[in-house]
Length: 329
Image 1 (spheres, rainbow, N blue to C red):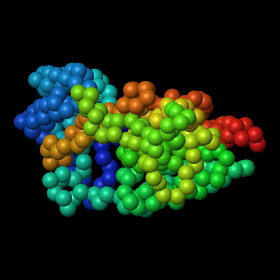
Image 2: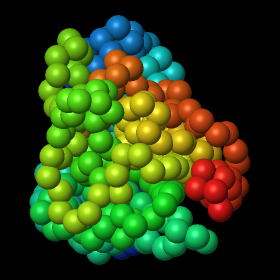
Image 3: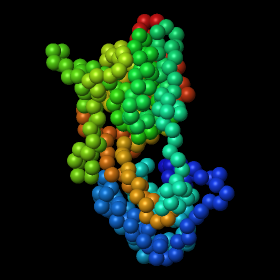
Image 4: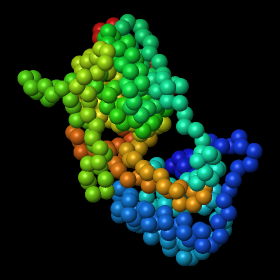
């Protein structure tokens, strides 16, 4: 947990700037940041009970003068993130320091070009006798160019007898991309006679349990499908996070479509919203949680649990052996 707390609190995107800003915070400014973070936790967080406990705790710490030594944005971000995480551990809930002025659009780093890495669709190759290997580095937002890239990527796997998809170190927020890729790998197996063209995978729910977003496979996709019956293996590790976890969990739970190989994933099943609170600070609060349609649960905190547990560096060899056995090679 220490690694992601530090990463959340310190953004290094502008480390090459000649001078990195660090906003000075006097007592009223610190009080404003703490109270506003506490208010947003109480009003917005997907887990109301824990969020209220964390909000009450940081308000009490403020009253006791525990934040008097945190006189800069960077220092306060580190301390508040640590205190909140001690009560409500959540990869998406923290106070974030940025080394530029949030109010000045000219200082904001330019977003990466999504197509620069083929939308996270890293490579395809064949391993041995008709076993496909797809490596995905991230799940990008679903746009028309991204969907076209996915079609080209998945089309290469259509003729394979077995397929291994490598999600080790993969992340991203593109749950819709995960649903699209699932469309090439699933078919309705709930009834022999009546088959739906679309399969409901999971939802994002708010703090009241209301569905705010649904994720379904697509009835029509470009290119050829791998199909819903041939052997499928997913490689994961503790850095598999976000939309990559959703993809793995959904395929694992849907009639055991995929065999997950590796070590438990990061445990990141929530979606957050960031809001500016000062010149160089913004709050990140988890506002929704995933709910798989079959289990009505998710992988938050625990991670997706592999069906075949092995060291991540051995996962590919383990999956390859399973695939070879499955296709009789």
